[in-house]
Image (cartoon, rainbow, N blue to C red):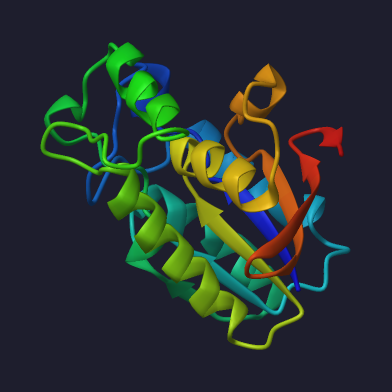
Length: 194
């Protein structure tokens, strides 16, 4: 199976550097809408059979033009939501949030105050991806969120998370995986071919 993971398009929260992790979240701004539309051309040669998004507004808005252009269903799955920052949601200081996600490399019980622990995040995100893998599609797109992708994808594909290149995912950057649950291989990360 081929999964094309896409980080959502730009929002006002992104430009304000706000840690927007809750539901329903900010909508795409004008640039984000243009980025979402540009995915149609960027992915025109991919044989995408379905588009899956988190149920957070910006992810659904990013996936909609692609699903419409491909004439495939768009399905939301709350398991694909962003890492929930809890009490830190909408903060503009990210250091504590990032430190907890780094701690998950060694201790999945570490948690955001009032938000996700490593255990809760990995359980829900893995369950969501496994459900999508079980559909039998050969190629799908998943629109999700920056921190969620930066945490889950290296873990799932066995990438070295200490490589700084893996921590950068701009709006509508793409990471491509192939394989099956428990045996994913990353082919691309943003503009980088692996």
